[in-house]
View 1: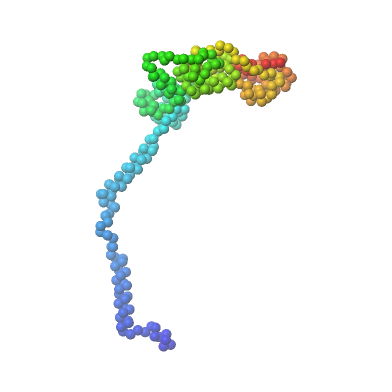
View 2: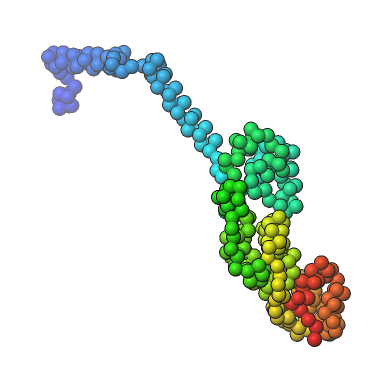
Length: 290
């Protein structure tokens, strides 16, 4: 009992010490609550300098976003969509005129041609034409036109035979660059040679006015020696390789052959339901009935 009591009873000096310690703790807490320890040197964020600083940051961010939004990329004007046209500032009528022109299979190959088709103003043309990107052969033809102003350059060709013309020969025509020269020769190889001048107009992407220039200079001086297949014995795979014959037509020819056992004359192809009569002259270049 005496041991327990000794821990809770203090002499006068000890009681005074405990009281003083309580006073110090209370004073310390009051100081922490009511005294502002922030430095007087730190300026308020509401000062005029701080406001100016934040305005500068906001203006720089706005300029960055505006620059990002207004950035434009080069494009081929032949493939402008409704959305792209509206974004460029074109009217709906102008966009519709361009789309209607493209549906005819024709292309615009200069900014003046673009304006002629769409009817846009000079101001809008000046604004958007720097972003026009035409095919390489168009650019090349324009360079050729400007190379000798007022004069027609002297052109050397190795031949005027359409079936013997080289890439260099075909490139001598303004508007026919590397791409179309190679494309014409590749198509000629697929056909085993041009049998009629109008086959030139079938070359993919070749505009009619450029094809006109080609057939005006290059002629079929000798018909190609095409290896014809016997329609009565040809296999499905072999028939499918023949120009102008797709899978559906190939299937119809085989169904007709099975129904008649054997074609007596190649002209019997015309009896096939939905046979493309406009391609008959071309197809019979590769087929015979024996």
